[in-house]
Image (cartoon, rainbow, N blue to C red; front, side):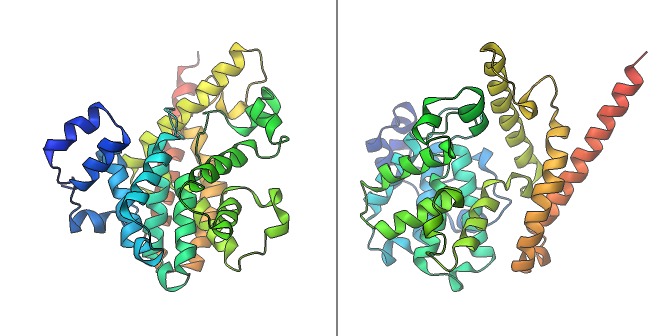
Length: 328
């Protein structure tokens, strides 16, 4: 029901050879229905129905429908080049990949509409928030900061003096891409503040009066999978656990300390989620609904998270009972 209308003269070449030229050709041949545009503004949007080629087009829709092209004199071809460059800098790993980038950006886009941030923040602020979501995990290697800094002491950790190496790297890659398309230094500084923890750049923490709100919105979007329908959220948990297990397997193979919450021999799907939802997601999302009561009134965000906590708590309880019954 929510498919794009393709001109099939171009689509075959896109999937066989996803070059910039084929992407531009494909984008010019696609039409996004009004139904899709409206669905794209909601947290129930199902990314699993879409190919990555289509996601690039939908990202273009987000930038266009927020009127960024007109407001900042941005040419469509420049935006398409930028989005494709971002796409090329996400790695083929289980979780922190281009599809995750799309989901975070789509949730940010949905929240902008649901909370009517267009009337509360400037257009440049919205551009920064959406672009921060888009770029927040660029070139993620699939191994977290604990692995980089403590367990493996990687070159990435050395490069950034053990201070948030992944976040600094994501931002450095983002700057490299943005430098090809703009020379707006204040925008790039604000983008840096959105992606990188505040302790990295303390001198500019008060540069923007709405910075903390903007950072909260990026964080909420980043960890928002459980705010989606279970059919959308649960496959993402499988992807995350696979990436976690890949890291712990590597740590075991190399004789490194094993990150406890990533050990496939100790972690289960329900146990990985219950405390995270109870002590991280629910408090954060509850505060968000205080800022934007419309999210609770319309049962956006918070209700699905509560449902996920109940689902995984029941699953964890059943698993423990099953284990106790199986014991001699």
